[in-house]
Amino acid sequence: RKEVEQDPGPFNVPEGATVAFNCTYSNSASQSFFWYRQDCRKEPKLLMSVYSSGNEDGRFTAQLNRASQYISLLIRDSKLSDSATYLCVVIFTGTASKLTFGTGTRLQVTL
Amino acid sequence: GAVVSQHPSWVICKSGTSVKIECRSLDFQATTMFWYRQFPKQSLMLMATSNEGSKATYEQGVEKDKFLINHASLTLSTLTVTSAHPEDSSFYICSASPRLAGSPYEQYFGPGTRLTVT
Image (cartoon, rainbow over all chains, first blue to last red; front, side, top):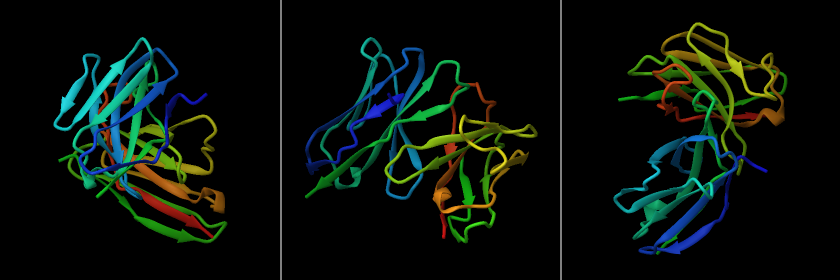
């Protein structure tokens, strides 16, 4: 079983739609959680950290459920520019801040 | 701030040759640098972690004699793929942190280097 699992998609949604991605992680001893965005053939860029209480940044909302070991990302009012691959990233406790990446979920926003 | 560059951005080489990739932190001192590899439609996989002036720590399954990492200064790390083979073709990405590995997270990614071995 992979340490960090994501549905690869693609998720094809019309502009303005709300879309949600989930990510599950295998090790309960997890320290930190993030969502990254990666455009085709580019480096990943930090979208937001995920806090236990949940957090929001504009149209993006991240939630963490430690009991069920999953993280979610909600995107409201999707824009064409949101089309990208969204990577779930976990730092497991005791790994010296090593980032463990999921394979990513591909989002395609269309007109 | 916190800009990391990589050079070259893409490279094509023949099987059996060696390729060097540079990673530079442009506006901060990178105490720790990380090297990742990403195959098509797969996740980024950490290859190794290096602290300036120390030997790199390689992840399980990564051959240290094949992927030579040098982190001789606080702004430069190099990854040399020795005797490259077509299966080494991948997207290599570095990241840099102003903190020691094990300290709170803070990594900045370079733009990546696409290596194609023919």
